[in-house]
Image 1 (cartoon, one colour):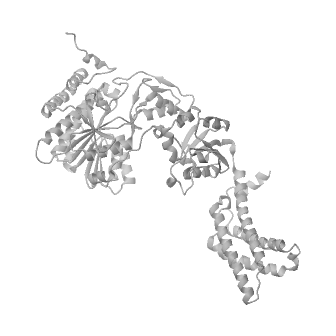
Image 2 (cartoon, helix red, strand yellow):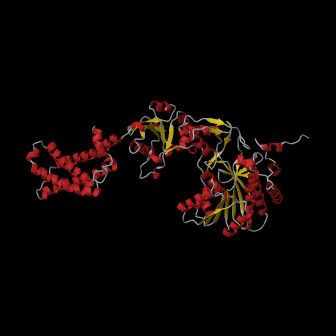
Image 3 (tube, helix red, strand yellow):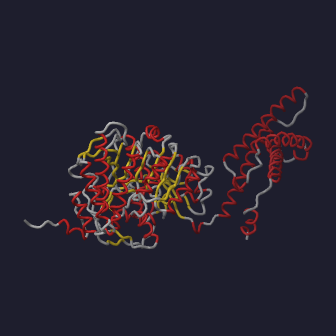
Length: 636
């Protein structure tokens, strides 16, 4: 009944400022009375009422001045904090210090006594205690009345430094209806066993799981500063195996007014747990090459192209020419430019790179100096079924752009290739290898000619996390729908890189290239796809989602290679970027054979097209495909 009575007054209503000020005046008045009682006795209230009244008037008058200066009455009582208590302390300290000094001076020079110094000092102590405790009491009562523990989960915080402690404070204050702080996980031996914010700190060791189970912990919130340790250790796997939910918060700089809200507390994603060292690039060098330039990006609405656009936009280009044939995604890019880079002169152009007339018109009008060619058909099974389009877009489109770069005297042409171009087992990978061959042979031919000509650079890397149509978004969608999560083979592995770091390396490689190089990136450790699926299921908190093996798709192989076994590499100044030494082709021969391949592609005879591709790229051996029969050699 009491809770129901007080709830309306401690819910949405806020006391007006004058009410809080009136309460504070009453508090310091009572403190004066209590000080006289403590200094003398209870009878002093009646025998010395005149002196008490004088003291109260002096104390109220001086304190009112400093209450106004420090605005001690302007806060909402139920949200009182340490800062509010400090304001009260400073205001009272200055007020009573002046009262005591004034009392001494007035008594010496004018024989006027405000109050005995001992009374003023005790009044100061009592005032501070009563004003502080009143605010703390309101805060505690409000929190107890509004605390609903039915939906709160027991949580540990991993990390006890500044960010970890602030996360714990947020759990105790504005997130207490959702999470109940039960302890800290620490790596520092000196903190193990210590009590912080009323809970114990535990070591990140072999006993951690037992500790969490004993305390019925369902959530571990990881401090952003501890994400690196989480990736390097087996802690995440151990916690996920116990169906413990992993969450994290943004850095302190991104908090709303140093307060963490529930929306900012996010589940840790699989991208956060893949073991990858951070990649840095020479920003100044990249900026010097792109600043003030006309930059053309093909495939600008795709995962890689759009991220290249974002990074290039930060280097203050003179103009951005963004080309893609996908209308809606390109429109999204246009809106993003308007929101984030309104000052950049950008053109968003819907065009097909295999339309030579359209491409010619774009080059003629905008004269791009720097070209990032990311447009391509990339899905392996789709290209196995649509061979002609693979040649007409990937090969013919690339050749068209490269030739126009030469004709219009561009400075650099950076092509995005793939690890599937190495020892290709599918049409898509082979089409990209043919693109590499054309670009490199063209670059070698231009080297022998005098005058200015574009520098042609090829970058080759593996899968990027979260790209359109890739495995992680697909798994995430399957998990959301309750499964099953489909994996093609239990032993299949892939290299992964995040989209931003892949694009940073593309920019760096483009800056260091002199022409004709094929750059490969250090992709880190390969990831087993079935392990990726298991970890994503655990991160989702689902226990009912199963994994189903569907068999290798057309043209798919168990592992991808970044280099042909006959290729060697040489290092660059960037430890993550290497140059592949690949077989060189004669440009005139390559040009003729590629033109023949393009001509055949318009026959739409898939077997004939693939046969011509294998003739051009002898290491192209089909896997799990109807084109395998073309690899069979008749017995002599």
